[in-house]
Image 1 (cartoon, rainbow, N blue to C red):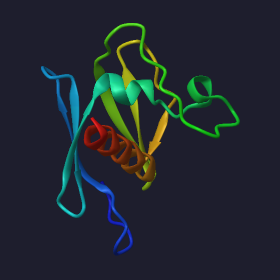
Image 2: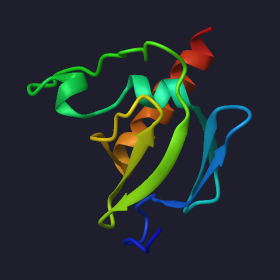
Image 3: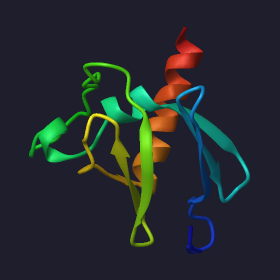
Image 4: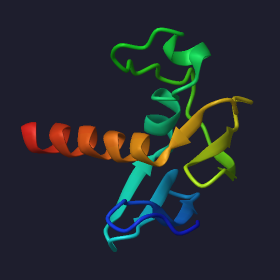
Length: 111
Protein backbone atom coordinates (compact mmCIF):
# COMPACT_ATOMS: atom_id res chain seq x y z
CA UNK A 1 0.00 0.00 0.00
CA UNK A 2 1.16 3.60 -0.08
CA UNK A 3 2.30 6.07 2.54
CA UNK A 4 -0.16 8.32 4.35
CA UNK A 5 0.08 11.25 6.72
CA UNK A 6 1.75 10.62 10.04
CA UNK A 7 -0.61 9.15 12.64
CA UNK A 8 -3.14 7.86 10.10
CA UNK A 9 -3.40 4.06 10.05
CA UNK A 10 -3.31 2.28 6.72
CA UNK A 11 -2.63 -1.30 5.63
CA UNK A 12 0.94 -2.11 4.67
CA UNK A 13 0.11 -5.71 3.75
CA UNK A 14 -3.00 -7.70 2.86
CA UNK A 15 -2.52 -11.47 2.84
CA UNK A 16 -5.06 -14.11 1.91
CA UNK A 17 -5.09 -17.27 4.03
CA UNK A 18 -7.03 -19.44 1.60
CA UNK A 19 -7.26 -22.58 3.73
CA UNK A 20 -8.70 -20.65 6.70
CA UNK A 21 -10.76 -18.34 4.45
CA UNK A 22 -9.32 -15.31 6.22
CA UNK A 23 -7.70 -12.05 5.20
CA UNK A 24 -4.78 -10.82 7.30
CA UNK A 25 -4.36 -7.04 7.43
CA UNK A 26 -1.04 -5.67 8.70
CA UNK A 27 -1.44 -2.01 9.70
CA UNK A 28 1.13 0.79 9.56
CA UNK A 29 1.50 0.72 13.35
CA UNK A 30 2.46 -2.98 13.20
CA UNK A 31 -0.73 -4.54 14.56
CA UNK A 32 -2.46 -7.32 12.63
CA UNK A 33 -6.08 -8.32 12.25
CA UNK A 34 -7.60 -11.45 10.74
CA UNK A 35 -10.98 -11.09 9.02
CA UNK A 36 -13.10 -14.06 7.96
CA UNK A 37 -14.02 -13.79 4.29
CA UNK A 38 -17.73 -14.18 5.08
CA UNK A 39 -17.51 -11.35 7.65
CA UNK A 40 -15.99 -8.97 5.09
CA UNK A 41 -18.41 -10.05 2.36
CA UNK A 42 -21.35 -9.72 4.76
CA UNK A 43 -20.42 -6.12 5.57
CA UNK A 44 -19.83 -5.14 1.95
CA UNK A 45 -20.21 -1.35 1.90
CA UNK A 46 -21.66 -1.03 -1.61
CA UNK A 47 -25.07 0.53 -2.20
CA UNK A 48 -26.52 -2.79 -3.43
CA UNK A 49 -25.69 -4.44 -0.11
CA UNK A 50 -26.16 -1.55 2.35
CA UNK A 51 -28.62 0.69 0.50
CA UNK A 52 -28.11 4.27 -0.63
CA UNK A 53 -28.93 5.98 2.68
CA UNK A 54 -26.78 4.02 5.12
CA UNK A 55 -27.35 5.07 8.70
CA UNK A 56 -26.21 1.86 10.33
CA UNK A 57 -24.28 -0.99 8.81
CA UNK A 58 -26.15 -4.24 8.47
CA UNK A 59 -24.65 -7.67 8.09
CA UNK A 60 -25.86 -9.40 4.93
CA UNK A 61 -24.52 -12.95 5.22
CA UNK A 62 -23.47 -14.52 1.93
CA UNK A 63 -25.80 -17.25 0.68
CA UNK A 64 -22.91 -19.70 0.86
CA UNK A 65 -19.31 -19.41 2.08
CA UNK A 66 -17.19 -17.25 -0.22
CA UNK A 67 -13.59 -17.25 -1.35
CA UNK A 68 -11.57 -14.09 -1.91
CA UNK A 69 -10.33 -14.29 -5.49
CA UNK A 70 -8.47 -10.98 -5.79
CA UNK A 71 -7.66 -7.72 -4.02
CA UNK A 72 -7.26 -4.46 -5.93
CA UNK A 73 -6.20 -1.04 -4.63
CA UNK A 74 -8.55 1.91 -5.00
CA UNK A 75 -6.42 5.05 -5.00
CA UNK A 76 -4.54 5.61 -1.74
CA UNK A 77 -7.54 5.11 0.51
CA UNK A 78 -9.24 1.76 -0.11
CA UNK A 79 -9.28 -1.71 -1.63
CA UNK A 80 -11.89 -3.69 -3.49
CA UNK A 81 -12.35 -7.46 -3.44
CA UNK A 82 -13.55 -9.93 -6.04
CA UNK A 83 -15.56 -12.61 -4.27
CA UNK A 84 -16.29 -16.11 -5.55
CA UNK A 85 -20.01 -15.24 -5.70
CA UNK A 86 -19.15 -12.72 -8.44
CA UNK A 87 -19.58 -9.63 -6.26
CA UNK A 88 -16.93 -6.92 -6.64
CA UNK A 89 -18.52 -3.48 -6.23
CA UNK A 90 -17.70 -2.83 -2.57
CA UNK A 91 -15.02 -0.23 -1.90
CA UNK A 92 -13.53 -0.97 1.51
CA UNK A 93 -11.97 2.29 2.72
CA UNK A 94 -9.14 1.85 5.19
CA UNK A 95 -11.11 3.67 7.90
CA UNK A 96 -14.02 1.29 7.17
CA UNK A 97 -11.74 -1.72 7.71
CA UNK A 98 -10.70 -0.19 11.04
CA UNK A 99 -14.37 0.23 11.94
CA UNK A 100 -14.99 -3.45 11.15
CA UNK A 101 -12.00 -4.32 13.33
CA UNK A 102 -13.45 -2.34 16.25
CA UNK A 103 -16.79 -4.11 15.80
CA UNK A 104 -14.99 -7.48 15.96
CA UNK A 105 -13.12 -6.45 19.10
CA UNK A 106 -16.34 -5.27 20.76
CA UNK A 107 -18.07 -8.54 19.92
CA UNK A 108 -15.12 -10.53 21.25
CA UNK A 109 -14.93 -8.65 24.56
CA UNK A 110 -18.69 -8.79 25.14
CA UNK A 111 -18.85 -12.59 24.70
